[in-house]
Image (cartoon, rainbow, N blue to C red; front, side, top):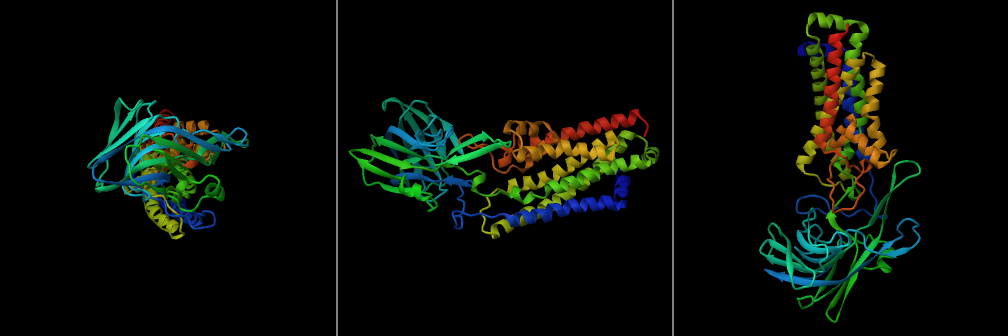
Length: 490
């Protein structure tokens, strides 16, 4: 049956041409989209995005007062005061207010030098999340909520964090193992304050995301290390505005055993604002999907319209097996088309983006393979779903319209901010459009305050879970089509 259906598919030029259109859309439009990406940083070329020890893109910008630790040792300090400013926050956006953003950070750090992306471990007091132990940008562990005394100790590659409310009774926050940590490292006090990010409903639908400059200041006393301290604004690339440079400069002062440090920025994994991801190379997927939906529906409704399905059922008894064989053929053809197209455009598009001096956020080889295979599975499962809708309805135009409404429209509504974020996320959980989750490249981190909306490239379901929802819709529709074929005349 599969051989017969494959021969039948090849014999109709329009169907073959439709698959060719899908392939050309993936490669051609993806290449066009990659060529059109531009990046500008205040009229200058953007600095390269730093990468962390795990190869992920990171944000590594903070104020650091440090000295050299040659071998094992520790540092203890008390955070006597922790204050900050937030510039022009809602609702009125008319003044600079005193306050700390939830993930403002002040504490003690061990870091392999002051280069952006270098391995580190830090124990810190945060704006609203108590004491935390964080290391190598992605790792985060909670400590006491009311402690203000901090201690960080190094023993080889192991860093242990402690916290105390009174400087007498200490509790262990946790340990971090930093791979290949050299003998001489920097140890010291740091302050960081991420942007104040808010997402509000837009009058035109969707949400409006705004980010505002913030700065934090911490006063440390009872610092148990003496000697000369050096100050470094890690990640200072000269891209600050004049207001940030002149009115709110980062820095530190030392007076009578108290060290005051001011700074902005964050120490965390980078999000989409750090640059495009390889998902931008797949801008042709919507056009390809439309072509595949049309071909898949006509693959079955054409036979019903011409009455040829009776001949097919007469030649190959077992209507359920016939419909399943046809689904396997259209699914396999579109999978191969999507796999070859994505395997070409993802690395080629990435090369084009980088050649335009645009910072493409790094992704692991495993993630790239998952995106390529996910694109192929999206086309394949979408084709099976559309085919099954056509087999159940037996009306070409109606089936194409329904497949587009269920599969393409929810994705467009959710990712173009035409709906409230919550509504868009529910659409991408429940409808066949959940399959688009394969495009998510960057994970969401709880310790990074971002909107994490579909419009920003973050989906409510994991990539394979989203594809599983699409597969379930396809299986359900195919079951309905088989049931109708067995119970009614062709």
